[in-house]
Amino acid sequence: MIDLSQLTKRHRAGDVETTALDAIDLQIEAGEYVAITGPSGCGKSTLLGLLGLLDKPSSGVYRLQGEDVAGKTPRELAAIRRGRIGFVFQSFNLVDELTVQDNVQLALRYGSMPEKGQRARVAEVLERLGLAHRAAHHPSQLSGGQQQRVAIARAIAARPALLLADEPTGNLDSAHGQEVMRLLRELNDEGTTLVMVTHSAEHAALASRNVRLLDGRVLVDALAEQLA
Image (cartoon, rainbow, N blue to C red; front, side, top):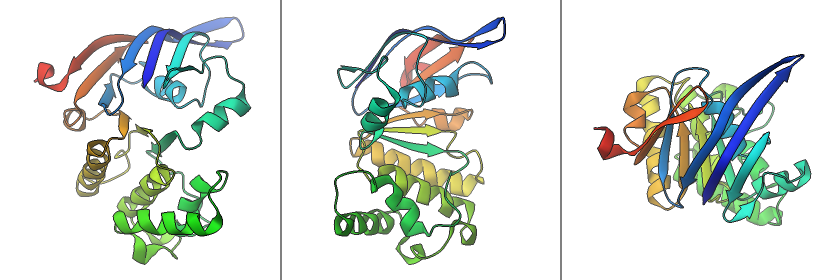
């Protein structure tokens, strides 16, 4: 699914250059559940942004499902993201002016699915996540846990092969956080490749594999049972 070779990301501000990721080598197989952990500033979110094609590496190779994507144009990257990659963010990133129905349907707007099919798929995922009765509500009318479930519904609406989650429980209380983690586990059990950035050791332990970063490098890459 994912094959990174010497992937490096540098940021430049004037004459100062900072290395966010330093020659990362990482392979993630289809269907894996990988937690990326490490202290603040270690490169976790930078790595997730590169995996999600939201940013481009300074050097190195990134193959996604066998396709080298590191040198693609922004338009090409956007086309690859559509349908292949879903995102779940800590801050939900819902559009306040849109209903739950329309927020989820955003993920399908630029694909080839006809309007009727889009509506049917949205109804399906909202029903699956227990949100069918909230379809006409706006984000401001929902609890934090419900908003994150809407964000997950939007992320999986196009049936992506890869789901990226950046601190998905960071703005939730423990009960809603556990609910979100259960949903993510279910999606992984159904075959979705899941890569999650988290500061929570408890949530990282739910993954089948843990990748720990430090100073932009992989410090530990181990199966969950090897870390126990």
